[in-house]
Amino acid sequence: MAYRVEVCLDAVDAYIDGCFASEGTPRVAELAGMLGLGRETLSRRFAAQFGAPLGEYMKQRQLAFAQRLLASSPLSTQRIAYQAGFGTRRSFYRAFRRATGMSPADFRRRSQNVSTHPSTRDE
Image (cartoon, rainbow, N blue to C red; front, side, top):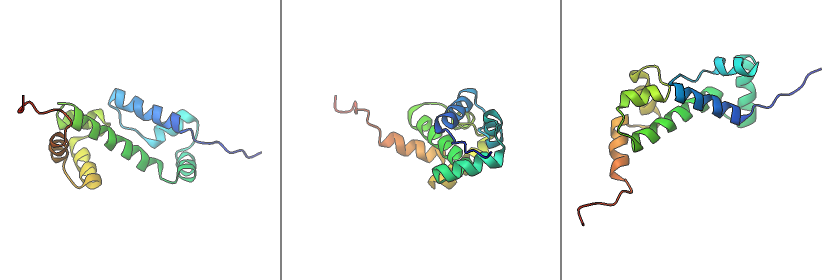
């Protein structure tokens, strides 16, 4: 008897958050194994349910996490790359530039220029 298993976005997000906490790279195959599914089955079900490939969703989460760190922490871009689960600084830079059109350093400068912190010049 065939049955349909829904992919739980909470489980996917919990896995990705765990990767961030351990500085591990999110991997579809690893998540599939944890959920007791094959990689292709999980990918297919995720795409059918959420309209985007699972690998793309994971990469978007990594980049969003990196952007938050760039905007709010003094960590080096290399440290942020590892915390966001990128295996190398180079892969982080490449993915970041492809997604945003700018380098992580440029993003950090722009986000700090738009900071909501009050200026101390007027005091």
